[in-house]
Image (cartoon, rainbow, N blue to C red; front, side):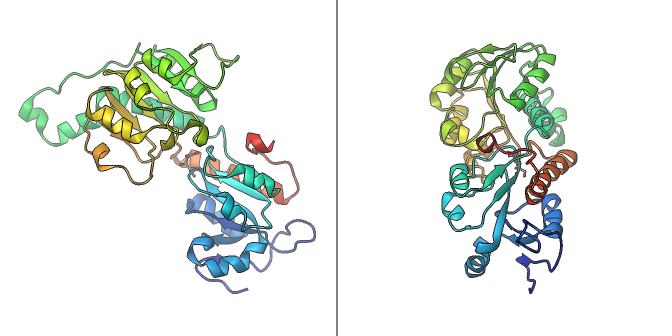
Amino acid sequence: MSQDSRTRAADEGKPGKPGKPGKPCVLAVSKLMPLYMGPLAERYELLERLHETDPAAFAAAAPRIRAVAASGESRLPAELVGRLPALEIVAVMGVGYDGIDVAACKARGAVVTHTPDVLNDDVADLALGLMLSAARQLPAADRYVRAGEWAAKGAMPLARKMSGARCGIVGMGRIGKAIATRAQAFGMSIAYTARSAKADVPYRYVASAEALAAESDFLVLITPGGAGTKHMIDARVLRALGQKGILVNVARGSVVDEDALIEALEQGIIGGAGLDVFANEPNVPERLRALPHVVLVPHIGSATTSTRQAMADLALANLGAHFAGQPLKTPVPECR
Ligand code: 8YV
């Protein structure tokens, strides 16, 4: 089989399922990190975004594509699943899988896996970093020194205290718990909202995001994305958070009504924000970028070398287990 820039086919290697000789064929459905792509290319016949780059070649290859490799931001809609008749497994390198149509995969007989737990610390660390950065205006303070304004104008305006403040967490899963532990170390009181109260946490449950916002100084979002949480944080919730409130989003951009957020920030309806995720990444609206009291980072929640390596290893372990006929490491809840 010939090789080109889009297709790295292997001549020999590990057998796939009994009766299917040669390396299994994997479609990388979007641009993936080298940490994941490198081993994929070594172990499998890897097709890189062939459905986007060469539809005719993709149509020819589709009947042998047995796996999809994806990131937390990848999209695998039902329409594309429908063009993958041999699909057996989707291996997401990410904990979030809101871009994957799991129902369509299941209907096709394919399982979806993701990479939970290994990124809890990093995402929780970043949440606290954004809380501190927004409250103490760290990026603005850095700009102040660099621009020579300290010497020219004197001390900066005073900022907000974080220790001892009220922390409201939207989503009390694995990462929500890691955020709560860290916030407790800052002497913060913790309350949370989720679909239902959790028996295994000591924190106070509040039934709605709006009620939680009304009693929080910091509202931290770490709930899964997708249709169930789309625009859960809307103008009413932001109004409830109030003039001094700070919104931190390390979940998904879709959870927040971004237009309502921009308006709330521009009009002083809320006090500030720290954002790792956006509605239409990597595009961040100019109006948001123009606001000096908002801290913006480019979806770096899990972006440390060791964590991304652990995520790649786990995604590859899921693929390896599947093709070896062994139990999957971390299927998504819907596929357990
Ligand atoms: C990454 C993420 O951006 O895990 C997730 O759901 O959003 C992130 O950790 C990405 O998926 C890394 O591949």
